[in-house]
Image (cartoon, rainbow, N blue to C red; front, side):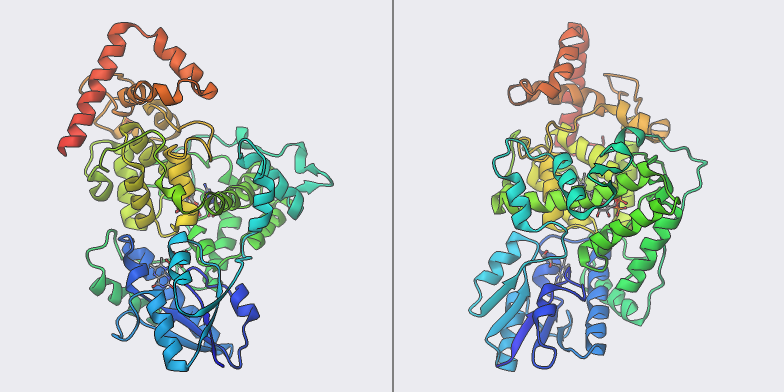
Length: 508
Ligand code: FAD
Ligand code: DLZ
Ligand code: SF4
């Protein structure tokens, strides 16, 4: 009996567990560009184009390797509207009753597939470095789940940057050395840009025609769309940017979208790069003396630590995790998250760049758009849906713990021990945005004050019942207590005025 092998848009790896277990001579690989996946949030145009083109390239390479691939194109009229519909259609077409799949990343799709009247054999997704069981065992019985301790386990497990039983250089984490603001005259290595081939051009035309109402700029499109291109981009990063990655990891500069970041998350998450291989390559660069330890440790920690940790949290906490709203925030997401029409230079830079590239680096996501939504009390679900839509690398398993957990503290402290609340001073320290802003970052209250400043205090006071006992917030509340009544009143009045303008849709 013919068996179908499901390969999803973010499962484009030759050694995918379902492909390893399948039989090339008799099984049929099913891949499909479907409406349900392309529109469950309004994904950025570049995200759809990247995935559709990468899927088409992957299907071609499977065919060249001797697989039979039943590929459903978005516009061919016959393709099912959802993955389930497409599987049923292909099952009927080929007389198949069984489907072999690798566990998919999102709860939403897992549930959808479970409901199908087909025999599903679901294999673990072993492209991650930690197994689900390993994460579960590590998490079991712990009062708090902290990335740092999980990361150490992963270092021990993989032997990455280890010196016997000890961490290389004597410390597990070199973050203290990684907080330099960047200067505009630094040499910025651009991520590798790939030119579009015939397949990509066809997909770009398709996306232009079918997803015109989705956010973001489609062109110029320069992402790699197969594993060879992804590996080349990664190699370029290791050579040109990794040595400085640590120093400028938290920096932000007007007009510099990528700085020393790798821009490989889209490739890792779609399956075009293998996370363990990337970490090993980074270690080789260090061992060869071509990048310092603070840079390489910092980079490896993002992948071996954070990426694996958030995936573990998503699976462990289950499908309801996304509903978290610990602080009871209920404001609508401001329209400027889509349009960039705000006077706040930092938010404008992050949003404009996001719409242009489908990319913003970690500190922009966390400390600019994330912190503003947190301080303004935006409903976490709306924040989550924005992040899921606008970033080319966004899938729930990685985006939800970062947004609901780390950025919005909507999980009440599962991912982080305190909210990333900060005034404008943080952004001023780490970027050059404030110099060109209509607002004054030094001004604490009043019409021209940086909105982050009064909102910061207002956030703390509004949420005192929930946060007042958090030991890591004590200093912030003590500072507030020491402030004179006049200053306190001015801050709260200014915050009320900003929030009122947000609610009225007036320009902020
Ligand atoms: P680099 O800075 O070069 O880092 C190297 C790699 O480390 C990344 O490619 C990524 O795979 C991994 N990494 C770094 N930080 C994290 C993290 N916190 N969680 C998981 N992996 C990490 N990352 C996503 O891949 N998809 C998302 O949808 C996503 N949403 C985010 C939302 C918010 C609010 C925040 C604060 C972070 C989010 N991140 C997400 C994490 C991080 O911002 C991106 O992985 C990173 O910006 C991608 O750019 P890069 O490849 O240049 O990363
Ligand atoms: C994100 C995405 C998009 C936009 N389109 C498709 C698609 O048409 N077909 C497909 O198989 N996968 C797509 N994906 C990726 C899926 O949404 C992803 O596999 C699930 O969210 C599970 O992580
Ligand atoms: Fe952002 Fe405030 Fe600086 Fe303007 S002054 S760029 S709003 S931090």
